[in-house]
Length: 251
Length: 99
Image 1 (cartoon, one colour):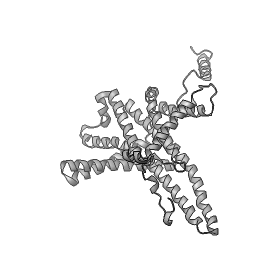
Image 2 (cartoon, chains in turn blue, purple; image 1 turned 135 degrees about the vertical axis):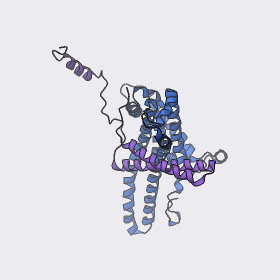
Image 3 (cartoon, chains in turn brown, cyan; image 1 turned 180 degrees about the vertical axis):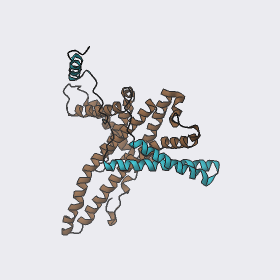
Image 4 (tube, chains in turn purple, blue; image 1 turned 45 degrees about the horizontal axis):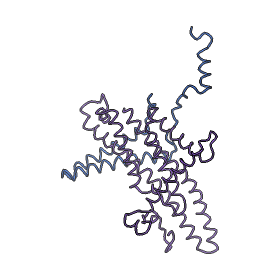
């Protein structure tokens, strides 16, 4: 796919292809959906199978499960405070889904479902709706005071309120664009340098040595991408926590 | 008077040693990563997304009310202002998580 016809084709990796034969084609079940199901299955497996011993001295899988749990719990409690524990399952589910999506996408032949803005924007809209509903449920009509700070002169209201509303609506957009852009940029770079390896390598004996250069770049990029994959899941979780903090404390 | 022989201090130290008191917040735990590239990218995304939302909102209202360029222009600037507001929120020191 990469070097067919000696051109750099870095974007076809994001195309959706129906899987599971005619049934998948009929219901539009793409490889993206398959990878989502795979991620959910792996997460469930990690936590059900990993925690089955409930050992005091944890094994490898139990350690991994406990570390992820405690990591996200630290984020949620650190940002929202102790009453934020109620929203921990929500943030944890989001974090694990995004983390596994990013990490699975780095495996060969795998598809990164977080590289589609439809997926990330769907997740961000979910965060937006949950935080808004939480704020409305906790504060009722006082929630609308969020859009007009107390003590501001009343004649500024026509300016402040639209700006605050647009700023509030821009949250899911920035949340989804950040994750999607990071994943797309990383995968495009990987694909471009991988194509360089093939193109330069086809030049013969000289090409083999020349191809070592983009190969080295790709090795470094993969390490960087693993960092980005984790970091973006972390950023997604922490921004969700910050929005929940604003919804709970409302200032 | 009540702290004649440093009893309170010793009690606090003992409690901290046993992990009975919650650890004091260091403030940056669970903070966002603060690399120059990370901050720069975040700032750019915040401004652009606010601008996009403002422009889209204005365009949508114009389509609905049939007042084409005017609301679009107004909300374009509103979106820019919201982007600057987002930036201000990004760099403003965050207040501590409430009790």
